[in-house]
Length: 207
Image (cartoon, rainbow, N blue to C red; front, side, top):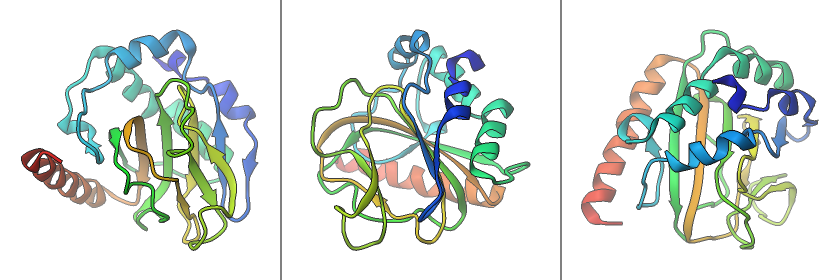
């Protein structure tokens, strides 16, 4: 199943170290696997992040999740970012739709050690929805890199206090998978509960 991931491209990717460590890997998902993964992607008609455990999806997508949580990928991320993730639990959330208020400048919660985003969209021509790695919290145009959420692209960064990121508004389908290595299992339990409650009320309100 690990042949779904282009580990060689990850190994060869350049790491930006300042103001915080991150890397971008276009073509990280093997082209022969993309069709199967996208066919089996969970149906998500609402905006927001949904815990993997709350979604229904096919076997191809499930194999992809197993590969992302596997040791080969973890070891590659550890080597590239210079961080020890041994025995750190993982948490996966999935997005299928974006709303116009998404993408505001933020950092991830302190309990998330590393954030990995994998995008599963086709060509991306919209000006919005392109994640920007920022130099600070105040200006969306003061960015080091911009990541169009195109098919098979990976972004990974260490979640430091200054790891600011965000994107211009976009509304519509925007598929992404977020994997986090977190500090402990308590974080996983709390985050799953929080996301599940949030997802429930989103479905209830039809938003």
